[in-house]
Image (cartoon, rainbow, N blue to C red; front, side):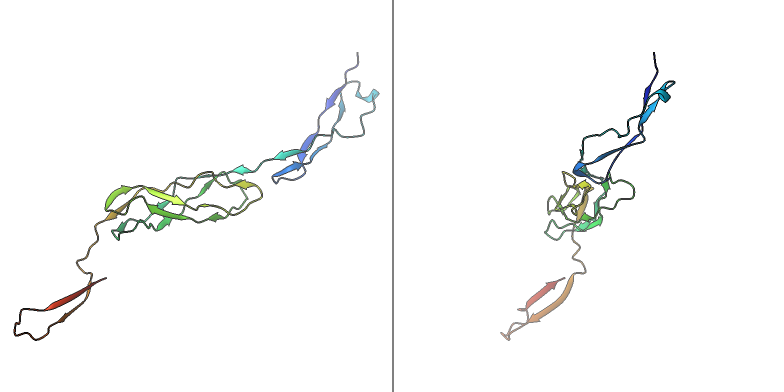
Length: 173
């Protein structure tokens, strides 16, 4: 009985990028074994069907933060540390589309949840945007300090014989 085995070579994709029908290329395939010299190895390399390389879907790290703020009647939050992405292959670069962050309520409070919207990635050959919005650490809305907010006080008095009657206009910053 003759001993001839398949000497497997290597298989590689024709492109490292995601695509619907990427060629698969075989190289250095042949035969081996104690009786391989008695046989002619195939001259063609094995043929593998083209295959899809799917885009990798990224996820958000939970490292986004916003600044605490004094009460101003709005839910607007200022991002201090933008969230980052998980899953990017070393050497690749992905541009983040910056969205917004908002306090879930406008009132004074501590550990108020932050809601993100509009965050994503710029169109990319190899990556899909995360399927959810990033998570931001909760933040505080503190009591607004008006003790130094008076910037303009004007008074008007129309003569009426009474020195006590004056109208004041106060403008707050």
